[in-house]
Picture 1 (cartoon, rainbow, N blue to C red):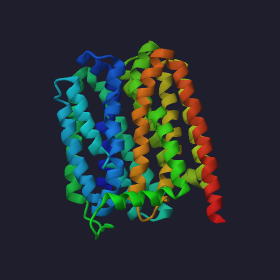
Picture 2 (cartoon, helix red, strand yellow):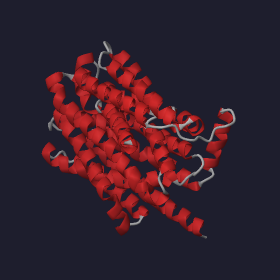
Picture 3 (cartoon, helix red, strand yellow):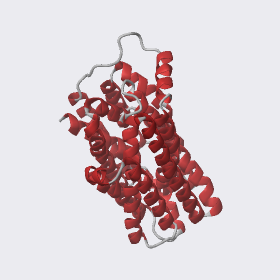
Length: 387
């Protein structure tokens, strides 16, 4: 029941966030704003999500990760429900900001708690299984959001996501027990800063935290712009965007189910390089403007490649610090969502100016280079630790 509750937390958090992705055009039409502006609703949640990470990590390590998770879930549930009734775009923006800030205390802190409870040999597979719940939430939020928006409207789509998060908050409050903390003495931000200095003494942290915003920003930052790109390509709008985002989630789920077998066949560095190249290839294929039914397979490849890279990074993050694992995961989430904040901003400027094809090819090149370089540095770190 405890692990099922963790899965529900990941599912609800992802569904609440990703249900907005295919709704860009619908929100733009309803509130009378440009599609590029409506697409920035994703950034409105992800920037505060990122900025809260340096706080949630140390607070979870000191006062208890379970308390942070419960508080965050209840807050996200209330903010998401309120989004469904927002009368103006600026109010929706404000609610997304507060909801995004609170959401920062769910997934990274839950991953850190799993890292505390699971032995290293089983950790990557367990984290992958937890990530399945997030992927299912993304698939449900995106696919159902895209399909149902035309039938019930975007407000009812968001209302449904809020109800799911409310149920998750109740289950977390009921089923997640209180665990030991590193507390004892009084909490201070000076001590938190000292913990982060310890984390950054590990060279693995520099590799993880420098690569993560590039890949997350140029991959997940693209999702709110899928429907505008499809419209430019005369290839679909909201409904089709929902199918493509769901296919991306299905690709990630496909990889997560076979992680134990792939780890027997490939090294972790090989997974990082292979995943980065597959992700880059999928962006190039998307730029070719094939029919959206063919792009479903392309976005399956997108999700498969992204998760090959991302899941391997999650393990590396768990090894940065044993004592301050919550802080290490929260810092990783900080950079991950800084990337997701910057990604939509970059795409909103580059796509109108140069068009979708140059933007997607440029993103593919950056992802491929960063992934290959990170694998080289991880290999160097491993050799140094063995010496």
